[in-house]
Image (tube, rainbow, N blue to C red; front, side, top):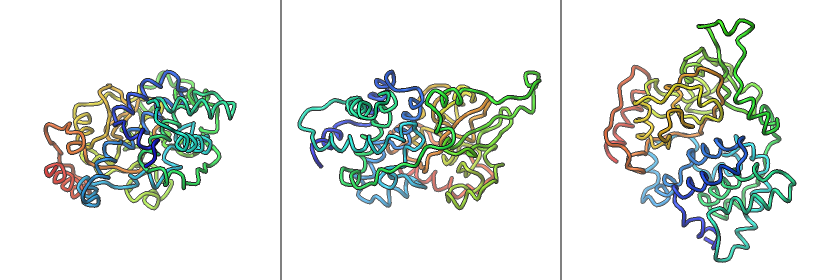
Length: 343
């Protein structure tokens, strides 16, 4: 571990999140929520626990972890839902240069320093680089310098909504679907778009007004979702239940959080059990798709993994309540309950 890695490792998860909050004013709106979501998709506290576990495989099994949860396997792709992802090659190079030249002093705002260097080189607005640079520094922290250095750093050309300008993307996320000439008279049969992949023109599905996101996703059988992700037995969003009992359907809200139903007591409680850092806002950036009902168009991002680690990692669960549900998830819920009881 070189001096720059040692410096970054001085900060815990709360330090990183605090730095994000202080960087938000100089971060372009297009990546403000996306950056906060990314850091909650890859929590440092969970990573450190698994790294220090005497038996990592047993810990992963105990936390019922499914999917692609390690950053070392997705160094160049985990952040593809950020607008700043298109600058990844240059940001990665700048981080490596900083790592090699770093001496003994640094700032928790290294992202701002590095982002400015890249912005000056590329002749782009610094605000578009702050988020992806902060993400890059956390990626380095979790994967190590050698793994970070060995990744190709290549990205694909932006497509779909992400090929538009930052301002156009922000505007599109805020806009609602037209309901026709007399749409304002409709009280039923309104339909809203849920965009689940902004990099694809067809990365979206429809749902009815006040319908849960997971329910609408399950009706979209346009692709073989199971072949793409072993967790996706019903639709593009992984679902093992419809009662907030399994934690597989958590999603990040890139746009339209205000158009979703408020977080109910059960969702709030279960998110703590699962370990997902939802926060206390009534309409937060992390939701369970089986609980969040939409009253307008929303844009989401689906994390590539899920687990149950809240009590052991954060100690934030006072009572355990996993309601039964008549779905094929019975075995998974039993495993989850056992995992929680044994933590």
